[in-house]
Image (tube, rainbow, N blue to C red; front, side, top):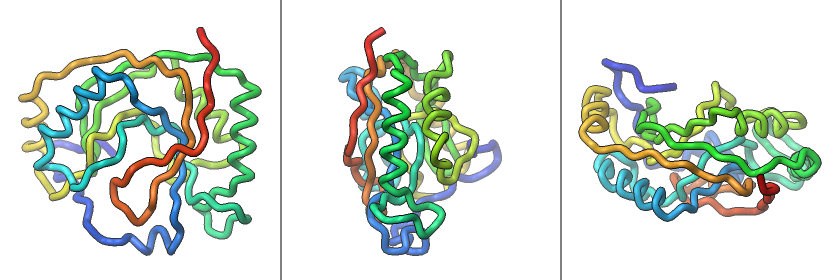
Length: 209
C-alpha cells in the first residue's frame, strides 16, 4: 500500500520473523536484474541520501520484482506459500514456449509504500504484466496485491511521518532512465536475513527485438 498523507511509515524490526518462514530457508521470486551502470550509480546515490531512514544493513541488489513464488522446495507443498520445483519447471517451459522478446521499461519518480521507499517503473506496453499472467498460469502468486512495478531503495527503520518522508523526496533532484530488458531471472533470498542478497538460480534470455 502506498504511504498516505498524515500517516506514518511501518518500520521493519530486526528479528527472525520465524512465524513467517517457519524454518524454511529460500524465498523465491522472478525478477529483473538492474545492471546499467549509470542507473546503478543513481540508485546507490539515492540509497545513500535516504540511508538515515532505511533499515541497515541494506545489501539487496537493485531489481524489479516480477512475480513472488514463495518458499522453494523440492517436495510437494505443505504450506500455502511453498513453491515446488515442479512449478518452476512448468513456468520455465511456458516462458520458453511463449518466446518473449526483449523490451524496454523506464523509471519514474521516487515514491513510498507504507513500509519501503522505491523508484517507480513505468511499463507502458504492459510487457511485465503479460509475463506475470503467464507465470500465474500454473501457480498463484504469494501475497498478491495490486502489482506496481518498482525498484526498492530500502525498508524503513522507524515510524517516520509521511510529511517528513515526502519533504525529503521533494528536496532531491530526480532522474529518469530507460531500461532494456534482455533476460528474466529466477532466484531467491535467505528468509532469515532481512534485506539480504539475491541469489540467481535461473536466467531466461529473451530474443532480440
